[in-house]
Amino acid sequence: MAFFRSVSALSRLRSRVGQQSNLSNSVRWLQTPTSSNTDLFAELKELVPEYQDRVKKLKKEHGSVELGKITVDMVLGGMRGMTALVWLGSAVDPDEGIRFRGMSIPECQKKLPGAFPGGEPLPEAVLWLLLTGKIPSKEQVDSLAQELRSRATIPEYAYKAIDALPVSAHPMTQFTTGVMALQVQSEFQKAYEGGIAKARYWEPTYEDSMNLIARLPAIAAYIYRRKYKDGKIIPLDDSLDYGANYAHMLGFDDPEMLEFMRLYISIHSDHEGGNVSSHTAHLVASPLSDPYLAFAAALNGLAGPLHGLANQEVLRWIRSIVAEFGTPDISTEQLTDYINKTLSRGQVVPGYGHGVLRQTDPRYTCQREFALKHLPNDPLFQLVSKIKEVVPPILTKLGKVKNPWPNVDAHSGVLLNYYGLTEENYYTVLFGVSRSVGIGPQLIWDRALGMPLERPKSVTLEKLEQLCAK
Ligand code: NMX
Ligand code: MLT
Image 1 (tube, rainbow, N blue to C red):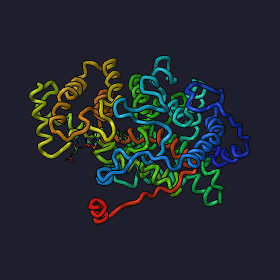
Image 2 (image 1 turned 135 degrees about the vertical axis):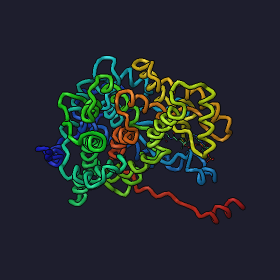
Image 3 (image 1 turned 180 degrees about the horizontal axis):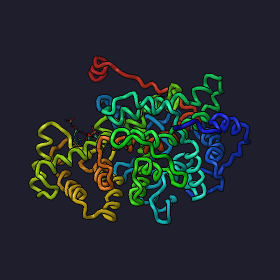
Image 4 (image 1 turned 90 degrees about the horizontal axis):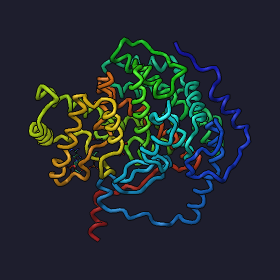
């Protein structure tokens, strides 16, 4: 069925190591196509020394600059608000939301190449941006799409590892298992065992991260086909981009669904470094565990209902509302009663609230705009719109919820459902594939910048009490 691709990543790596580095000093957050280089690795190789110098300078000249104080609330409160790690790809402003290398979602929609003029940003474009900080040209994006397709072959044993699980296993369990099977091909592990020098760690990390990103859609699609369809693999289409190919391998070819998948992957790719999945990947990679090991750990965090699994919970909750009233066309009073019932059972309203955001998530907003354009009359979309009006005042009234507004997960399910992807237990796998586009680049930079083993200090309860008594 599937075989390793003929040109191995290792031989590509060897040939690249021989290439001359061509240092450019002019590239820092320029956000315009600044080179015609269509090889992402070569582009990165030019950037690495400059970034290394910046980190060296920060450590040498500003190592003791304080970034804030640590309070008991932070230590007991999930480290909320504690600045504790560097993440290059994106940053989240509590009010404005995500910026990818400084660019908001509407800016990305305007400036990043799409599959057609005016189309949603291609995930390949986001990947290029996150890794280099530069807006790629269409030629660069096409070249990256081709590179990802060339890396996308799945070894037979990865399918077999998934097949060893019962079909009833949750898709996220199957997905993590598939990623762990892919780990067998880790170039970083091989290179480390071969004695690679620290200065070159990022090169096999690049190979692993790119291979991982390239292979995830096929693994993820297999899980979907196995669990919900006939189990037959739909092969990759060489003419399609990353997002479209994933939809195609799942079994969806409606051009609107392909376009939604491009948007979906792009907006779910990265959300700075402190979220559970990204932070987990960074932490697990810090003792030099390879990208597969780190990403599998990240997926296990993503599978929690307060994080990525919330997209599954949202659609389940919306369906439970429809089941309760026999129709999605319900009154504000009926919806209010249902939300209060959810809260009185000691449950959260899924899709609402956030650890950092304090306004409506712009990822929610852009999905709403997509829905308004393509499915304004869909009854579940109309229900989601109504929920957005009714939930925030109720959560605000509780007096403890810091952000009563909708997050990314409040919207994605109804769009997927509209296009025929109705099996909500699969939704977090889509989030997981997307998140690799953000995590992969950071793992490469972690190695390029020589980021050390992560090991914060903990404190006992007794010690905390003693410190507070002083
Ligand atoms: N429904 C009910 N209660 C909530 C909600 C909500 N949507 N959001 C927060 N609260 C409660 C929270 O449980 C906590 O209660 P308690 O003190 O009794 O433990 C209180 O409000 C304070 O929590 P916050 O400080 O506002 O939120 P925190 O930063 O701790 O948690 C989330 C953030 C996202 C975990 C939380 O808002 C939540 O559980 N939301 C629902 C699940 C969800 O949508 N998660 C997806 C987040 C995005 N993602 O993709 O990861
Ligand atoms: C994410 O995309 O990771 C979520 O919004 C959660 C977060 O940022 O904490």
